[in-house]
Image (cartoon, rainbow, N blue to C red; front, side, top):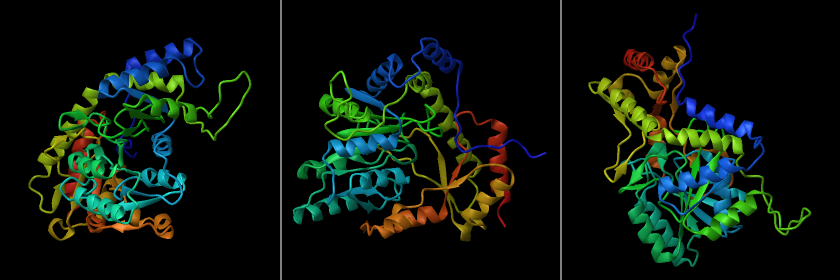
Length: 378
């Protein structure tokens, strides 16, 4: 009999989530919106030190709305991290704009501030400073915002922080999700907390969040009948899912601690192996431990990244390559998106692997991962 599947980052629930879900169910607030949505927004905003939040159906929807609030549209070019999930760049195209795909830095795997600054300066000299940039807090680690803020402030460029993977991380003592003019969280099933599917848009500007809520509820004008003066979207979170999110948020610290402990275990277990290097933890902040990522140098290790992944898969253990850079994705090549750098992200994709890291990962399964990785050397 095959052993049970070990997943990369599965959902992890506690009794409090069930209590809150039943509260929503018993109150008959099962349709979109309701008291748990209001409470989830308030509790998340307070947790991150941000004034306002809108709970939405996905992080992708939050990115889309944020770009609309910033006036992004056809003809605009928006610098985006190339080493990320496709939702970040996809949202730019929803507005009729085009992403400019900026490389990562090897020091943190997040967007390279120097390359981003050069792109903004070059665009400004052409009289086309971007309306926004989208740094991604990759694998639970914040981008380096201090130099990004400096160049953006000089040219009036808004920062849209994609903190989808980073809830529980910090940058210079401030929480992820509070670094930009607008910020986005994701509560997808594999994230550090989940609402099954869902996301949130955060900002200190009330007018932006009010507008986001309006657009997210089909842009319905105040009237006794259904009246619409602008195009809207069905992007609001349901009361049931918000109840789940409230319960998950209460145990965020424990989830972060568990994932960081997995990372420490893997680092110690592979410390003697040549050719294995882990994603650096930047000195400017605290990483949330979302996924433990490493790189495999085949010449030194004796096997490549894919051989290691397949060895784990053969034992019913899920591991995945790190994000394939957006500039290597066929869709963005066909769109003719400009690329700034790219070699660092390409190397990380070629060699990078994400290991099982969920907060519910059992010690014996973690030990199996180590055993199989060690045995995969030729």
